[in-house]
Structures are given as structure tokens and as C-alpha cells.
Image 1 (cartoon, one colour):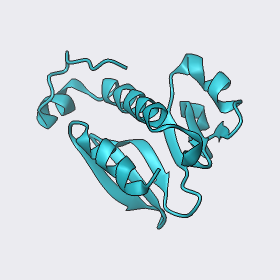
Image 2: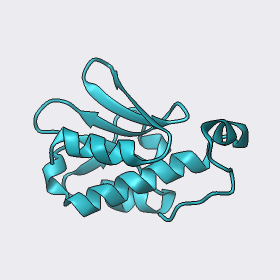
Image 3: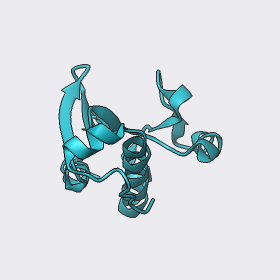
Length: 122
């Protein structure tokens, strides 16, 4: 999957910003909190947050690893995004977005224009 397809999907989610961090990672955030990080070198890697109850199972699957530095927050790394179908990747990214968004302070959600009670399906 090309970086542009990932970018298009991530930025279609409400109130998402993007920037380059660490010189080589495209990061997508909501309210200043990252939910998806895409490595810009081949093979394209992607990291995202998963639910607590999924972390161990997913991080032990072939092609998945606990994400360096942020595994303690239930982030996983897919070393080659081509291992995932577009739908699988979108589902993981959407879930990560929602997990991060759900932890944002109510004041910040209101400032972003999102009512705090709004919940998207995971």
C-alpha cells in the first residue's frame, strides 16, 4: 500500500493533523496525540495502538512486533505494510484513532469541534 493511500485515509478522519518526526516518520495525530506512524523508507512500515486485550496476540503474529519505545502503551509495528489488506489496515488505523481520541480531555474535544459524547464504531 502506498503512503499516499494511508495519508488519504488518515486525513479523512476528523481533526487529524500530520507531520514528519524523527526525520523519517510520517505521523498522524488527533489533538496532538499520535495514532499512526508510517516509516517513509522501503519496505513501508506502520505503527498503531491496539486494545489492551489484543496487544499480546497481535504482537506475536508473524510480521508484527511490539513497537519500539511505545509498546508499553500497546503499540504494534508492522514491518511491511504490504502484509495487510487495505481493509485490515484501515480497521487497525480507525481503531487506533478512536482509542487515542477517547482519551483526550473533554475540553480539547470541544475545541476540536467534537462533542465529548461522540463515539465512532471501532
